[in-house]
Length: 352
Image (cartoon, rainbow, N blue to C red; front, top):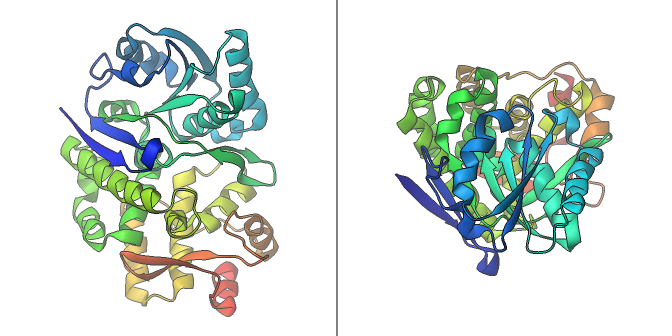
């Protein structure tokens, strides 16, 4: 049994299909392959688990594949070149569909390759990690990292469909599950106080991988993201609230070396820093920190130093007119993007 959420973007609209057991032929993915050819992009960890399971969903298609090395450290232009080379070698044309099978790194690289090849071919997201299912697979952000900063090279390129099989979470390592929960918590913090409170009551169920709890958390996260993306596809305004904690988090990832801190771990510590910058009552900051800690996530950043913080954050995509912009909370469940923040408080947060 599955449920569907629609991302309403006019002629770029697409469904997010959520259910358990959708691979192994449980969903006709071939319906979204507009030609007959497709290229499945996965990695050395996920492909042995799910590539063969995916094939029954592509009945009647001619399927080629490319497997990438696993990890954030490989989210680079040179890794994307591997996908482009594979498409060229198989004679892929504009009717070819790129299918991303894996976590957020695979989805971002494969989507960017699809956006670039022949100036854009169709692609499909089949996310297999919690973080990808609740965040990176939805919204059309694709790209790779540069040695000077995270996601500095990329494009907006919406998928044809996002297929979320929650059964794939059974093979997800605990650390990766917890990292995904950071993005789930983020959605409650920025948009839905009721969902945030539900997470406080049900975190243990999520950590124990209770199927009903996971489906609810994934669905609500996708609903929130779909609504925000539909209102602001290319992050001209409101969509930037989805980056709560990310300005600090991306700086952590960059300064520590990509892959040392998982993306969700860095965002967790970054959210606490952003909450402090917001000037929230101490009780609200503590509430956010306690929920993140209950998910097994870090709430303090590593020692980086003021110059490290400011240098890394200076290349953040929310910088406008050489002025840093942050996503701040007005309260749990209510957020905004601003360049009008207390510089003294920022200095204090960084010094801590």
